[in-house]
Image 1 (cartoon, rainbow, N blue to C red):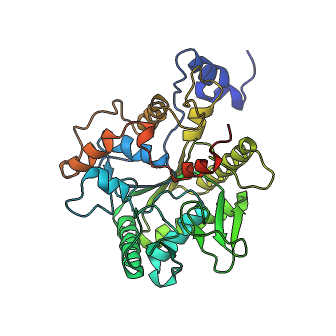
Image 2 (cartoon, rainbow, N blue to C red):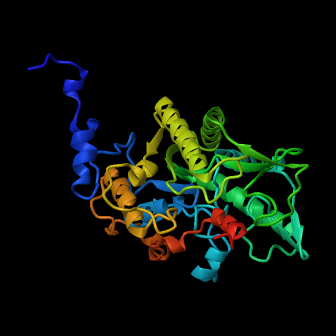
Image 3 (tube, rainbow, N blue to C red):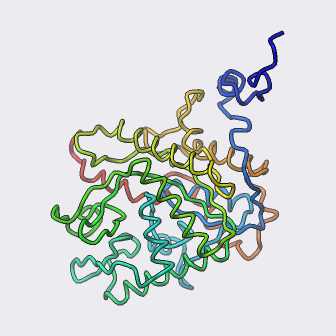
Length: 365
């Protein structure tokens, strides 16, 4: 019998053979892959934002009867389909996708101090577009005043949502982004792709490094606590690869691996520093080598519905929920939201603005 040592006391899930390799023989489901730092109950108000994969988190929460906080709701009388086209009911706020930590720090800074916001506006065909969320108003706003009134409503919703919530879930998606080199404005997408006009004299590519992401995460936590000292953070990294990379000379595959590695490493280290921050391994669950099935669609980018279900199964198990369809404890007042979100169960229903870049790659097959 070997002498006692730290490895002889480790649980089974700490060993590859008795966790990942064994799980591969039974569909790949892992045991104890996520052991939450703090409890999340159906009484907790939960905010979700981030990349397109964040939408699956809200759907899983709603389907299991948790209180997903839709802090910015559609105007009365707007049907579900139209509301979604205008950016409502996708995330907790009408922000569109927030792919980078830099984008989130900017929004939180503006929510805390609206006077600090940048006033840049894109004009096209007598319509006005918000450069931080150009797709939330199809056809654009009729006036600049209307644009900033809508943004003010979103910033107020962010502020009030954080004030009233217990948990802030942020899905990190990208390290690549675009900024205005003159003003510092962080865009949601490259100008000229989903709106606006590209100007190489002022539009600068930015690829966040590990220290940048870590610094942003610290800032995000400080900003959230400035609004609500008791709110907790739950981070996860989207398993969805980059649709395209603007990194000079880079192939999209290593660019994707680089981006995800930085986000994963920064989020993992950041959560180790704070008791009120946790990390859920979405990226790892979908991409680990112990899987004996394909989790991605034919484009090898979109996570299949069964892959999404697989990830959310682990998420809900970590929260102590055995049946994701158990809505017996769901708040009655949120029935309309629960029904609307639960209907959208497939990848085709997910709003992913980054995929719009693919139109610039057409006819190249």
